[in-house]
Picture 1: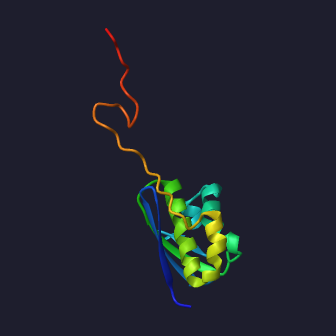
Picture 2: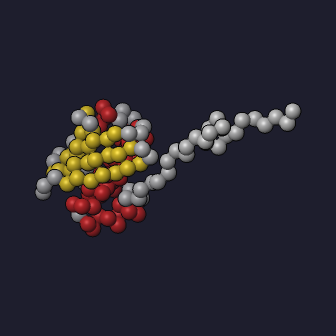
Picture 3: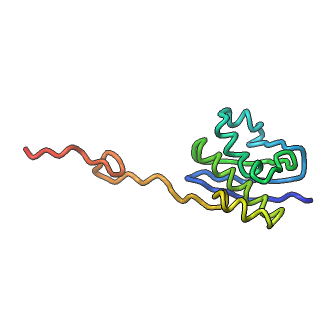
Length: 128
């Protein structure tokens, strides 16, 4: 099997993934998964598509992530891994899609409007 690449996005984060056969190592921006995402919850989010298909120790993953915060980055990486796994084996698409790993979550932060302190918050109204 050659190298498979895929891309995933969430909020303003973009994750590019390169999937090869291996022993289950996940390298993100030249750091190990546990070093890049110290939180166990974020590590769980990243590994969700692999555990769903029970192929955690079958593939090595190298990822480049930029933009956004840690939550958006972990979810973008999850989507990219799921897309790469579908490229490897098309029969896995149904299982991953039912869990929502292939669906792009398009929610982004609403912009701040001029003359207001935040996107929807208004300054306090004073009649007099």
